[in-house]
Length: 253
Image (cartoon, rainbow, N blue to C red; front, side):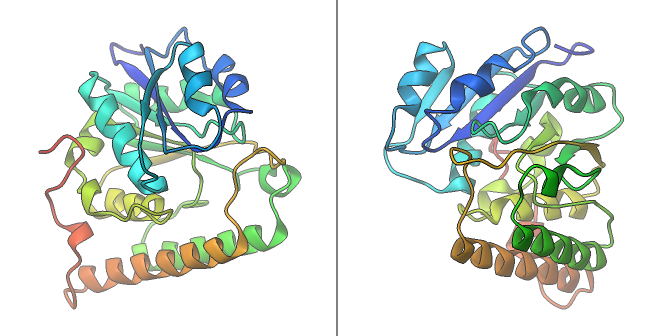
């Protein structure tokens, strides 16, 4: 807990059995009140490892996709009274040690959402991010900053913290169940006028860390471009988009 705010860490998991324990043991439990893992029909022992560690574990009987997994994560965290929810990948690609810093920026009222950026500093390429992904990240971020009228160092990190208000109010159920969910959510955060902060985060790419392949990366990139264009057209009043209309939040508001 920080400043009277209950903090939950949610772990959207898929085949994370080999890395989950390393991730879990670096979570700062002196401040974190709840850890929730959603296993998206993994083919390994992710759920068994999570239960052995004492993590609150939910298992999807069928794979719902990365976005679908997050929807369950956020819905469950709100049901258990979280005031701040930090989404952390259990593949040990991001350090859990930043949870406290990210949550504090929300707990003390400075921001409504906080991103752990791999691009601030020299973390991305040094940590092993493939060059094509780095170049795509920079291009897509530039495009989004221009069309969203915002300025972030990157929109594609999987390490994020959100206030309860954001999760209750954004129409997250209208978003994709695929990887582009992440991007749609940030576009919604900007659309509805919430404040976004960033912290620099080292990252690690290794065999057991999850990473989408080139084909899925292309699909994701096209989805990102579509989201940014939808945002700009909606701002100009030329075309509406369901993801930028109220209703359909994770808390059912």
